[in-house]
Length: 157
Image (cartoon, rainbow, N blue to C red; front, side, top):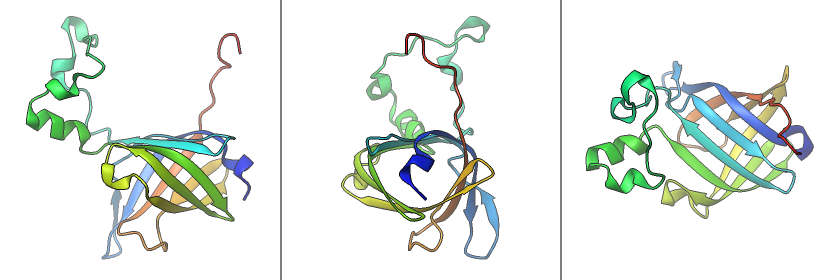
């Protein structure tokens, strides 16, 4: 596989966690984006649909309320915890070696990821990108199925 094969933005279609007893269940992070850029940078933003929008974030009529950009520090402790549970975000660079991609994390929601290399196996199948942690020494066995995001060309580009 070549880097050009994966360059672009991919949307999570499904996340599957493989359990030690051989069973499977939906992964905690079951929606989000992974982007690979031609310059070798990448980001991953993975969320759980279970987090949903908080009722307090809505105003009359169901429209979203205005939320300050850096407002998380103003949340009660329980809400801060809920804000990050089921959410993963990191960015850095990537290297591709055959069907193994290594994400070199520079920025992350979880500071324990910063400076680490995250290895994943990749496979392209029927226009979908399959990313897996299996057989790579990872503590959790996860598979993600992603589809390339196809959007209209940005105005003026």
